[in-house]
Image (tube, rainbow, N blue to C red; front, side):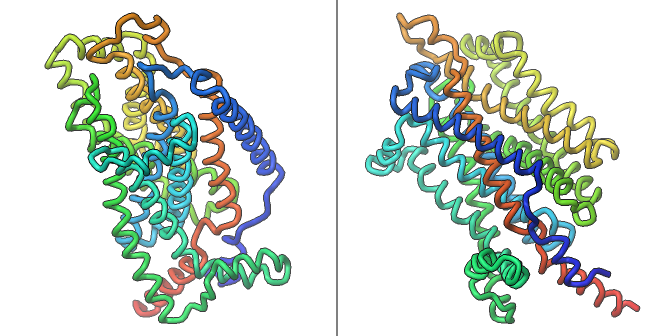
Amino acid sequence: MKSREQFIKDLAPKKFTKPEKIWLGLLLIIIVAGMLAYVDQIRKGLQVTSLNDYALWGIYISNFVFFIATSFVGAATVAILRLTKNHWRTPLVRIAEIISLAAIIMAGITIIIDLGRPDRALYTIIHARFQSPITWDVIIIPTYLVAIFFLLYFPLLPDLAILKKLYSKDNPRLSKWYGKLSLNWTGSVAQKAIQQKSIKIIAILVLPLGLILQTIDAWLFSSTYRIGWNSTNFGPYFISGAFVAGVATLVVTIYMVRKVKGLEEYITDYHFDKMGKFLALACLIYLYFNANEYLMPAYASTVNEEVHLETLFTGHYSTIFWFVTIGGLIIPVILLLFKKGRSPIAMFWIGLLVIVASWWKRYIIVTPTLLHPYLPIQGVPESWRHYFPSIHEWLITASNLATALLILTLLVRYLPVVAIQRSIDEQESDNNDQKSGS
C-alpha cells in the first residue's frame, strides 16, 4: 500500500531531462521557421501559397479539421469517463483534457492563418450572418475552448494545492504560482461539493458542445454545393472520423507520457487494452460511414461523381486514399482484434499509423473536391487544376503541429498528468472496501 508521500513523489511534475530539452529545442526551431513563413505570407499575401480560386482551402483547412477532431474526442472521452465514475479512467482523463485544450487552441489559430491576414478575423464578427455556418463556428470554438479549460482546471485544484506545499521550500516561486492557481483550496466539504458539481455540469455541457462543433464543421462543407460534400451524411461522418483521430492521439500520448515519466505502475497494460478496443470500435464505425459515403455516389453514377471517385480510387489521389483506408482503418482493426495488438508498444505504432492516416484523410476530403467543381471556371491556368502545398504552407503547418506539441509538453511538465489527490482517495476507498468486506 502506497503512502500519501509516495503518491506525491511518483506523480508530481519533474524537471526536464536532457532529451526533453532537445525535444523542446526542435519544436522551437520548427515553430520559428513557421512564424517566418507566416510573416512572409502576411507581407506578400497568399500568392506565396498554392491556394487559388479552385483550391481555396487546401492544407490549412485540412489541419483545422484535424485539430477540431482531436479536441472533440479528448473532451468527449473525458466527459463520458468522468460521468461514469470508473476507477480505471483516473490515469487517462487529465492527459485527454490536455490534448483537447492544445488541439482547440491550435484549431482557432489555424483558421486565422487560413484567412491570409489576421485582421480579417474581425470581419467574421463585424459582418456576421447567422445563417452561415462560419458565424456559428466563430461562436462555438471560443465557447468550447472555455469549457475544455474549466474541464481541465477544476479537477486540478486539489493537486495544485499539494504542489504548492511540495515546492514551498525547494522552489518558492513555483510554489507561489501553484498557490495562486489553487484558489486557496483547502479540501473542505463545501469546496469539494462545489468542485464536483461544477465538474459534472461542465462534463455534461462538453458533450453537446463537441457534437455541435463537429456538426457545424461538417455543415461548412455540405452547405457548399460541391461534389463529395453535398451529403446529409457529413455530420455523423465527421463525428465518427473524429473519434478515430482523437483516440489514436490519446493512445500515442499516454504511451509517451508513460515511458518518459516512468508511470508504468499507473498507466498499465490494462489501460492500453481498453483503449485498443475503443479504437477498434471507432475504426469499424468510421469504415461503415466511409463505405456509405462512397458507395452511394458510385451507385448514382452521375458524370461529375464518377470523375471524383475515379480520382480517389484509381487516379491522382488513389495512393493516399488507399493508404488512409487500408493503413488507417482496416489494418488497425485486424491488429487490434488480437490481444498482442493491444499491448502498449503495438498500440503506440498502430496509433501513430492511424494519426498519420487521419491527417491525410482530411487532406483528401478537402482537396480533390475543390479541384472538381460542378461548373469549372473557363480559361484558367493549368496550374489551377492541380494543388500541392507550397513550402510556406508546409512550414506553417509543421509549425502549427509543433506548437500543439509544445503546449502539450509544457502542460505535461508543470501539471501532474495523473491526479494525485484522486489516486490517494481511490486507494483509501479500496482499503475501506476491503476492511468492510473482511
